[in-house]
Image 1 (tube, rainbow, N blue to C red):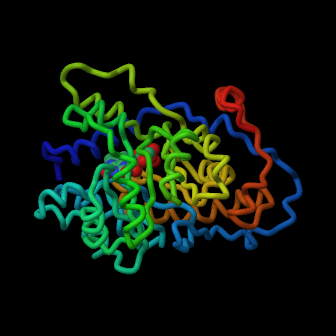
Image 2 (cartoon, rainbow, N blue to C red):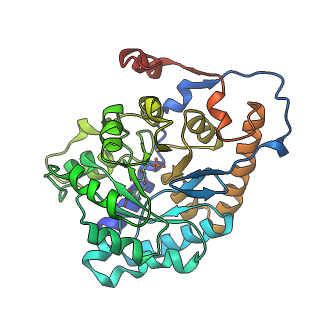
Length: 344
Ligand code: FNR
């Protein structure tokens, strides 16, 4: 079906349009040191993990994307089928559209209908009331609520928010009073250790640093502008690898999640080695689901699970937790960043 003129549809079609452009990735500045004796078998590698109090059979999941229109209902249905058949967790896109207009609720509830027993995260932007957070969770019987922080996107978005004065206070209220775990996430601009410090200080326990390197919302929103373009903000933010480096002082205190520009199972293992307990993928899974279809994507997701176990074996690491002991080298800009920010 051809997308109609609607922001939710535009986000999906523009993410698709720009996904085809190859970008440099800081994951290429991260190398594992190869050792010749793994001293284990692939069958010994366990890819299970847990975060936000939830047990996960796989360390990667479909991260927040869409809902809010007829076309995106169909996209969510495809993603939910992939999640159900592979047993991976899945997040919906921001449910705020359904809170304003009940007629689009089914574009979100489809995710639960298709996958009644799966792990599903609801999603909302910051600046929402506790009452709306509860409504979003109830709508899809979510296992957790993702709340996204996205100030650069709002600034570049022609119709975006301009007042970010009370984000932390509102977030704190939700974190302390919602019945399900709250995951605070960026949307591809990454996080600094100062941001993570602010989040931990208000009681946030699960954080997805969602860094730069994949879907670029400064670029997407800029493309949607007809005047007063922000071309020079398209490189704003920290990459996923740099954000993970920034998070190092907190890895024993929080459940760290990573997303942003994940291209393959090796990128996932790299993120896990930097302390992430789970890795979210949006743009690439969207691309696979729309281009290759549900069946082919299910095969690919299952292949990724086996390949993660294979890479863990090469590293001689039997669990996701053990991966943080892998020998790694950080090069180039990532190394410079660590030195300038005094991170070991
Ligand atoms: C997103 N993302 C997103 N995030 C969020 O928290 N709420 C949302 O509603 C959306 N909407 C959305 C739409 C589309 C089409 C895409 C591709 C992405 C951001 C997403 O969850 C993730 O943080 C970034 O896309 C970075 O990951 P990738 O795409 O580089 O894997």
